[in-house]
Image (cartoon, rainbow, N blue to C red):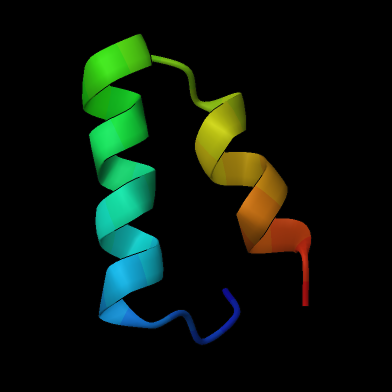
Length: 32
């Protein structure tokens, strides 16, 4: 996995918890 900042990870987790969409976390992860 790419090195993401805590802020990026937090935003990603919040989206997953709010929208329950794995894609929300997959898109930014692929972006290097």
